[in-house]
Amino acid sequence: MQTRYEIVADLINSNHYKKVAEIGVMDGTTSQYLLHHCDLEKLILVDTTFSKLNNTINTANYKNLELIEKDSLEASRMVGDKTLDLVFIDGEGFDCRGVRRAVNEIFPKANLIKDSIDDVIHVWYVYI
Ligand SMILES: C[S@@+](CC[C@H](N)C(=O)[O-])C[C@H]1O[C@@H](n2cnc3c(N)ncnc32)[C@H](O)[C@@H]1O
Image (tube, rainbow, N blue to C red):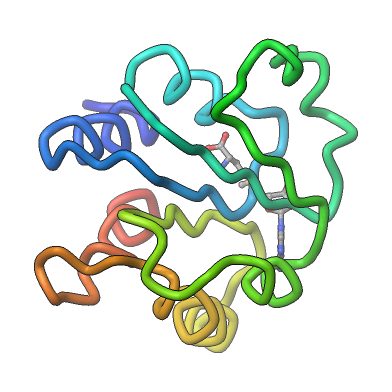
């Protein structure tokens, strides 16, 4: 069985996505994998705290990395609409209402190549 980070990386690589955001980063397990296995122009990491991230990733080493240490709603206001190819929504504790809110916030940020909401929520559902 594939891990969540392998699934996300496959989705990115098979669609040649270049601009990606991860909402909910924790210790950066997925972020680190994406940095090493995907050819990304930009990876935006969003979390309310990056206290666990520095043990995993030396963020200064990656020019394509942007860190936003804020709640997903505040972070979404800092990202332009249609600027991202994929958003991996993985904040723990997102119940149905939380997922709906997250999708509503994040959905406009994605440049939807397939004109489909699947690009935004696909991986989240695979993971749960
Ligand atoms: C399951 S962990 C993320 C795991 C990570 N995506 C990975 O694959 O390794 C969930 C993270 O979501 C963050 N989080 C929860 N709600 C959030 C929100 N509304 N905005 C930003 N981050 C949030 C938590 O602080 C926590 O670090």
